[in-house]
Image 1: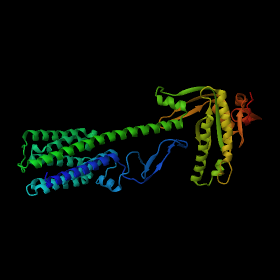
Image 2 (image 1 turned 60 degrees about the vertical axis):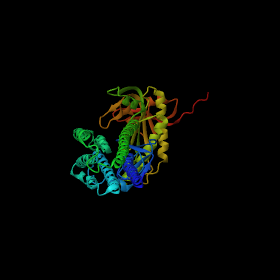
Image 3 (image 1 turned 90 degrees about the vertical axis):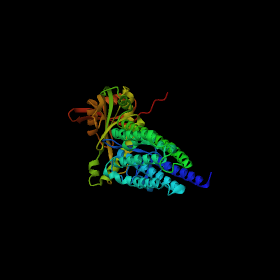
Length: 485
């Protein structure tokens, strides 16, 4: 093998590898186009009434524009700008297709340049017609990104037509012996340029490629019209065509599988976030029923439910004149603490309304256990507020009320659905709170009777309750020591 042939083969291999590596690297990385960001290890979920921070999700890279980069390595900024050249659309799908067009345009330019170099080294004067074609294809490929602003598919159409006519010219120039017509088989990749939604446009150009291939196979000369006597050069072109076609087919398959993988992961992440949100705003049993999809409406009757209301006494006066950030930070920290106490004591948080907190237990029918859980939770709430910092220089106290009785529970709403509780138990618990004392847990006689074995109570006496009248109430003061066996 002569020295010229070795140089030509080396150039073919290097240019082919560069072109394929560029395409594969782009497919591997994908986007976004901004790369500054930070790593986080928790996801914050906003609910209608407060912010809940779920402790376990996954590590994620959050970009500067708020998007999450899950896969691949970081694309160099210069390469990201190069592959996004000329793209002005803000539609994610259009942008993705146009980036594919840019990648293909640069690959075509690299292929044209490699052929230009090889042809020039082999016989510059004898291959002038083909060299002119390579120069035109090289220049046209570099102009393709500038055409995106003319339309969503303008760049793709220009690239497809240029490659079609350029490839047809080359096949007829070097003949079927060069086997350059194998490039026509890459026409299926045009679907990446136009997308499934533009399948008619894809079928039109695919048909043109198929027709061009059939015409070339049946009518193109075997030895070609340019330097037909040089069979060794055609053998080298055949090798180059096979290598390039194999590599580009591999890149296309890699891109398709990578896109499918991304879609599956994105769908899984969305499902996990949906599951996390449902688990955040719903009790576990209700969340499971919602996710099963077997019930059109969730509505339950609870014979004996223990309901708790708590309110920050003096909050309005303490918050007056304070910066919004200071007020929200105080409430956010307190609500997070109470949420943790709810989970620890087996109580279901129902909702917060302003500085009020509502919770309940006993949904599964275990009335005594539910009452004990609510009582322990109430005592823990008082301790938590005692440890909380003052708001606006004022130390706040909780006013808590508890009652047990029949209630109705269910999921209501559509766009902002929620799990709520209604009935006499709710109304009476609210009255216990509003007519209570700061720093105390006022309970009804019914709750005292249900939980008398678990807690010590202090009788308050008859209390005038709005819309009810004089009612005997008690203060829950402490847990009752368990009797030793």
